[in-house]
Image (tube, rainbow, N blue to C red; front, top):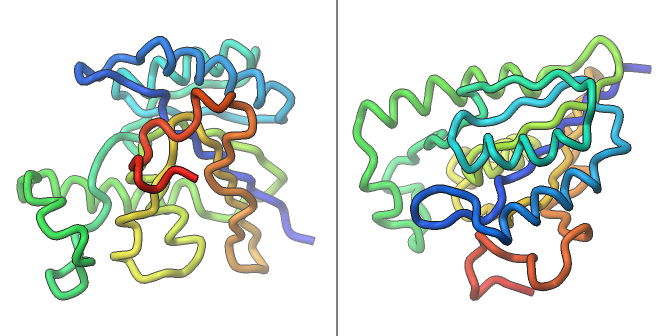
Length: 198
């Protein structure tokens, strides 16, 4: 039997235009911490961006003793820019505001993030990463072995929980995606395109 590596991915709570958590975002984070309090986490990593760092602080208040680390790998960056022919029609112009330097930095970060977060573990581990929509979309795409351009359009609601499982002898598994069961209706679907709320 190979070891199980469970990777829990949480998008930051709802944030205002200035990048700070709203009242709803703080409540989402607290409820997420309560939901995850019984998970046997071995580590927590979070983005250096304020909205994610604050979300992580509110969540980890419910995880005493678990090591917490800020990491640029969990940051807010573009993981991959598809060639124009592979870019979905709805996404035309979506990535136009990013400079060549930002694109290159994102490519390097995603390579390191994928190596860090998706490798099989030597023993059973449960890791939490508090991050942003783009990284979650990329890792879900990777787990499903979808084409690289497919990360675009994989949306994660604020403080929803996605769990991926990595084992040495099997392909990655998507255990759960966009789980909002811990959030009341009024706190669900924030950060998600309104036309896609269900």
